[in-house]
Image 1: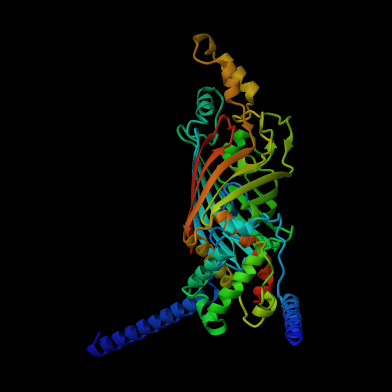
Image 2: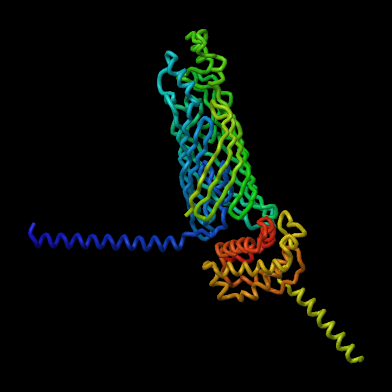
Length: 366
Length: 156
């Protein structure tokens, strides 16, 4: 390349670079102008609620009719959230983002990761020692993990939860989730009918300032087992499948009551009704149901060696599900961050009882 | 003596009619939050004097908030606003209706106030409660009693 050619190439590079810089600057200018036009954080502290484990604006386990974030009807606001619940046999990690548009529409995404500790160790061990059980049960030698994507949308229909203090009309919103559970093999073992499903809800929320209390009632139309973490509905997957299936959605009640104790602090309680699709249902190990597994274990003659109690084993292979409760304390030092500390009482989750423990959540709002 | 008596009677009648007129022109009436606020809310607040102190604090915080202070600087007379707010808040908390200002709708009709600006005043109201040591729950009685004016004030 001659020096002239090099000079021309350099000039072209400079021109390209300048053009790129100009486009970038224009883009930044446009986006900052756009942000100035659309961005809004004008709601009063805590009135956007916190974020549920499903990612919707609301309490800890129950979506409210409020639109997440601090955006008023004049703009857009969003945030990121992370929730950690430490239970005897599980540790739920739920993280994602929400965006609220004009205090009307909310979109959310959340990834839930649920390491299950020792929950499925017994099932996994039985699967490993029984002859003829082959294939993937979804159970790892240690710490089987369930992962689920949750896409959410909510629309505020009418009402103002905060300011219509002289009216009985609450704020009402409808919303829905699409949940995609990634551990399909485990859901087959647990005999859930589906790994992916949608659910819909209606939320009614109102703040009663004279008693400094927020009340929110939600009706959720769903077939979820443990919010979908163990799939949706029931389908007998043992040989023959004579147990049939049941994946018909049902309406479940959820309630949040929060006492406002300061402009940035609330504490309260929540209740979420759960279904019983898998309550009392055993596991499926490649077509072998509980009875078959017990029989096969008995054939191994381990009982006589005192190694296995088939009585306890039957219990250990049977799932249960309970309604969820929690007591929570929410604190928002400013509009950029809030914290929730809760004690969650979730009862039986799949094979393990007494799943009660602490729940920590933080919501970063822009 | 007789003339003095006539003058006194005319003056008294005039005062009465002025008072009646003022009452008739009072631009707002007590709101009805659900559930109702306690009948002794004004007493819990500390009486009219504390309402006045609260209103002074309210405008202290309003005039420090760049989201809204320009509006009050441009359209409002803070001293007059404090005077009227003391009357209005005293009334909605259960005190006598001595409010001499225009209705909330009329007073805010041309200001093109949006929800963020309204919320900024609510935030100032809570800050003012803290400043004059009003308990948060008592402060919420005032918020409950003022909240029904929201749609009259927010027009954008």
